[in-house]
Length: 361
Image (cartoon, rainbow, N blue to C red; front, top):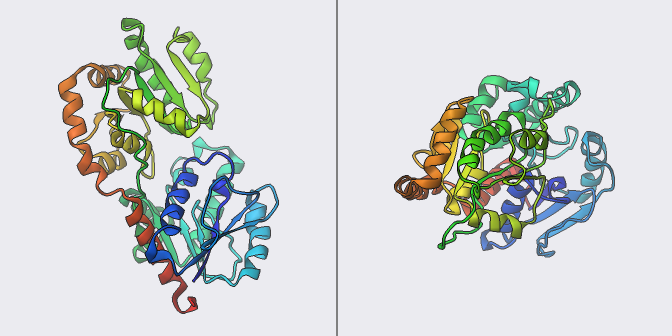
């Protein structure tokens, strides 16, 4: 079977959806149970990943990579490739493509909270995602929470939705002493309350002058949040760092050194980086939300949105209370058991095969 894939998220620095697609492709191109299929990847420029050319072809379709590319140039290129099914891993799909489509929709933040997006971006996301959900034969999502959102907000029939948790990249698990401090990894959206993290960290930084806070993620907030200005106002220039991106080896070192991980998101489809932290031996504090409870279970400390004093206390506990650290990390294995790349790839491929139906060769 020939499976077309929108691979734009693998161009440049792969984050979020790019890492999701990369995890699936790694399994599909090395697993014997997927060896009978060919994957055709469409992108705006050559990909920064190495895949077996015997089962993965890359089609470079030049263009800016936005909605016009997706809706006009991509279908024209894909039409010549005799595809059996097409997989769109990032919310929207080429609506006029004359092939069965499976689309992955990870969350509906742009519908649930339109105030977090510019008017133009919000309208584009809402319209294209809604239309893509309607034309797709099947929808893949990553949590029961988002499945309920799809049913309630887009009126999608439950039987068209497959909940397939992604795998977790087990970056590193250091056995030695952890000499770092608090870590956050993820794109900086307003819903992730990174300024609250800076404010909650500040009292601890004043009590412990060697304690550090590392923030890793592109600032995509709207309205824009001035992280560097806030760090300066809190007097944390020597202890807190924000970097929009770091290479994998630097990220590994940060996970290896961190003593606590904070992810204060009030809305997620799942929230993968707290799970990566747990898999790397780093205890986590998260906001108390349904999706955080679904993903982390007992392997996290939970705080209320806006409770800065409670956040400070939770960070203090994770940093310095060894009994709590051990107890939380002991529960990580149960929370992480659902998140396996081989299982995610096998189940997603099964959805693609079902969508293709009689078209598969």
